Length: 144
Image: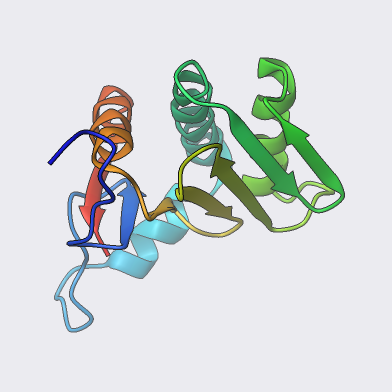
């Protein structure tokens, strides 16, 4: 299988703070911890990590960013950071941001109020690169 082959084993992957899905009947405090991590300085750190992944990914692939009325191919780094920040926090933009990787079937979605991004239909090469970039930011990638 070459590096551009579509990863057919899993369609959607999660880029997350946690290394795997928390069971619905888990004994931990998932909702309390997630709520805590989506406030204040923690939210800034998370937005920064997401932006870093996307900025570095944009070094390898053209990114088509769609966030409300903003539709741009390869936004300037500052604009991409600002769009991520406004999407993740309570900014003026819509609560969702979709990023399509040009010349691939792959999309990435950010949603306000989530502690993760989703990666849909990655090629093997894109998945491997996103895993490396996420790990460098202290995040995890796992199949949804």
